[in-house]
Image (cartoon, rainbow over all chains, first blue to last red; front, side, top):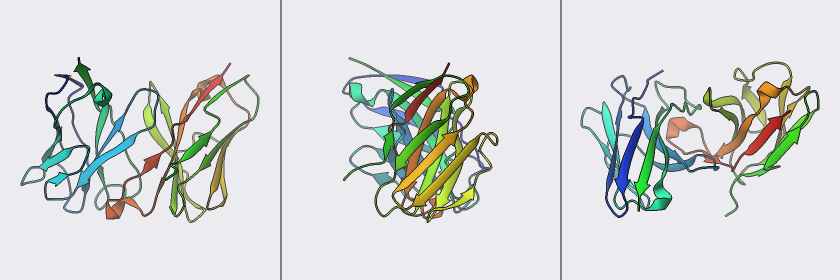
Length: 112
Length: 116
């Protein structure tokens, strides 16, 4: 299975951008890059996903390196509600095509 | 739109008792997944269904665990007999297609299970 590597934790101030890195050097050509987050006492929540091109949605932006071996989730203006564990997961193609394999993720703390 | 609905939200029971967790997936979703989350092991996939048929149950810990999906709008995860080490948060998720197409999974809020 293609693996991902994320920092254990990151801190941010409210209203500032947050850049969450993810390394996936063994990604295959058909693997999608998914980001989920889990707020305290809730189930994981889909944030964004992409294949090759950068992606934007109402929650965040996903910047994918040209060689696809790394990606960055960007929260443009962090709010207290964005404090959560963020998971970077590869799916499809060369990875398990149905299983979301959650690692330890990055714990994001937002300071008021 | 209603999301994935799980019940109960919390369950506390004594060792040896039968436990039944319930899940209603999002209407129209063909895939249903059961996950378990513990501090030690994180989030693990237990079993998943496609069109009500179990496809992969390799994550089910042992024979005490069973899951069924009698129709497209309902699934159960049963533990009999329950043991303290089964204490965890159990999540149900559904998806319209499999992840090869990049489709996200939608999770319920989970059932927090405590076996005394």
